[in-house]
Length: 262
Length: 206
Image 1: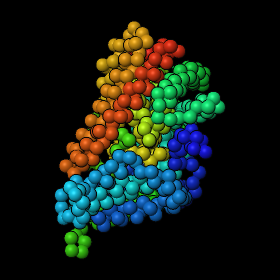
Image 2: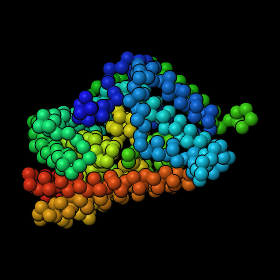
Image 3: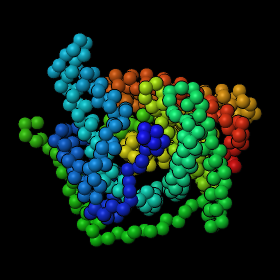
Image 4: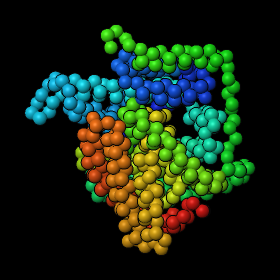
């Protein structure tokens, strides 16, 4: 079964048909809300404010109809983030909590690592709840309605569809390799074979691009795709606005008001 | 690996990255004719899929960046292609970040454009040797440059991040070796099977 696992590409975290309250709101509103939340959270530096943001993001997940089990797929933390979290407690000078040889674990370093982890995971969870819970094509259309350049939206929508198709093409090629007894290992043969595999994907995509271009031209493609499904603004979207304001304002206050003895 | 998550970098670094990459994107989009977009999208998607493939190296596996090869084959399209791939990855895969999108785009796109500028002349009249050389050089240069930019964006965000920046810069060296090897294999393969892909500018004006 190990081979089957190495054959698969990482799966996207979205499913598209979520029915939670957050997932029924207007796509544009959700994207803007995620962006505002992220922009605010990355500027926060106080523990209470960040804890608040993190808890809110944690609650947003079931509110969007997503299961917390999704988080286990995120557990193999991004490599880069783990390097940071491991080096920070030792590299920041401060009150020494624990010492082994030249390594000094400082309180300030630990707190800084915790702050970074809270910021990173709060934004990630909120992004999952608000945006990953929508169908990818709807995400592209909403970005277009929000004023992202038309060329970029067209490229995004086409890339979304093509990466599904090419992903399937990759699975087929990989299955064929497996049928001929290919097992990936750390050696020259594997690197050669994977290089040929990627080369073959490129060759096939050239042909695919020509077919796509002809098919689109056939349907009157003039360089952009019409943005269907405006998915009008509803009353519940207006009702969600004060809530968004409350969340952002509350976090700002937690950061900037002196709480307790701070 | 090359994707910085939200909440790590300092705000000035994030803002600078967002502004510069927005400028670069505008510049790149202005150079592109909308009729080329289907082709651009297919290649962007192909590189996106290829960068998700796990490549064994030593006891662990890595994902290739492939930005050098992308720059070499796609030219200016590489900027919006990388932006779109990073956006999709941040939103739907939980890799990278929303506020760090600008910085992440720059860290990958600048080395890609650099490779295009430097190595495309090698492919004007391609031979097998030149294809191998261009591929290997694109792999090494792009990965090392990306590692340096990544380390710089961390180091500029605070002195506390400097040790982590060092560790990460060093970790990019073995990646550069594997990426050089595989990129060379890919270009030699394309030279034999579909040389039209190698002709500089072919994709842009095709």
